[in-house]
Image (cartoon, rainbow, N blue to C red; front, side, top):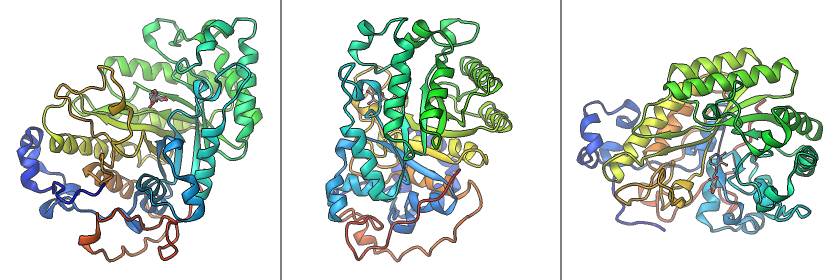
Amino acid sequence: MTEPNRTLWTRRNLLKSSVAVSASAALPAWLKAGQLASGFRVNVTGTDSLRAHAVSRGLLYGAAVNPLLLDVDGLAAGSTADPYTQLVVSQANIVVAENAMKWSALRPTPGVFNFAPADRLLRFAALAGQRVRGHNLCWHEQLPDWFNTTATRDNARNLLVEHIQTVAGRYKGQLHSWDVVNEAVDPKDARPDGLRNSPWLGLIGPDYIELAFQTAAATDPGARLTYNDYGFELDTADQTAKRGYVMMLLRRLKARNIPIHAVGVQSHLKAEGPQPGVGLQTFIREVRKMGLDVYITELDVNTRGLEGGPEAQDYAVAQVYRNYLGLVLPEPNVPVALTWGITDAHTWLNESKDQWARREDGARQRPLPFDDDLQPVPAFAALRTAIDSSRPLVAAPAAAPAVDPNTLYKPFRVQGSPTTSTQSPLPPTPHVE
Ligand code: XIL
């Protein structure tokens, strides 16, 4: 896993990349002041971790994970040598299952629930002192195959209610939040309310959303209930329109006194595309007036349309992280941000064969703070800097530990993970409400 001849993030490397050539005249301060002059070397452990920095600002930072990749038994025994497990423990204070809590994963047949992978995540997070998000209770995608032939207008309400009671009931009192309804808005379906023509809408009608939230609230009153969606981050005409329909839905729910606490902004951004701006900022402030938080739930940066090598990708991706999180994290009602994965080794952008994920040059995407070898990339520095500049310190920053540069990457030791008793304890999990 360790790469002895790892490319150093020197200024020269950046200048070689096509994107960096145009942008090089103005290397941003957070990169210039970082490690570029001597190569991209940054300590990511202990008090230098994303987790420690998030804790010091009263924020939750985390990532989507596949519970089956986590060495939970090793963690429990205090002896995991698995670098991915160590990375997730050391960097995140909140996690979410990338797939394990979706209908298709939980319900192989109508009468059988498979909770094993989701339970595993809960056990992992408890050992690591992390919060857990639930994703998700009601969505039009990743429904099991049997759904199409089994769900009818007569039984759909019961099916939805029973599912939420069973799943949210199992994890009652243990979750930070639930994505109760995912992606219910799609203006392309041209309904006056902007709702998507999803199976749930067809079977139950538009009130399926109210039903889902009410059932979730009755089942797990402690979880923060979230409406989660994508494609309303930008100020393009399409996304501005979608943002308006999301707002319409939120106003409807509030007017009906439906228990909802947060809006999840997925934040699947594109390196080469337009970036979020004042429209999203205004939206965040508007929903704050309605008493709602905003969670950044699935941040990653797609470089499909970006020419250039890995350096160009890393530079552009880092700039998107910096600009985007610099825009949203200072808002007081944005207490949570998760990336959709934490390492390029495990991201849907490298796993999907679909056109929207594939680069023309066939290169792997680099959308996350750690690369395929679990080494930090400039997006790590961008993310940590954005956390630091988001709000005042709530906990005194501990002095950065002395670091021997020669041991930074050999092996990838994660201070703060409970792998050895000589390492410092995990930072406390913040209380964020
Ligand atoms: C994606 C997962 O990352 C993939 O592994 C899976 O094949 C498809 O779903 N919006 C969401 C997430 O709410 O659940 C999706 O996750 C990404 C888009």
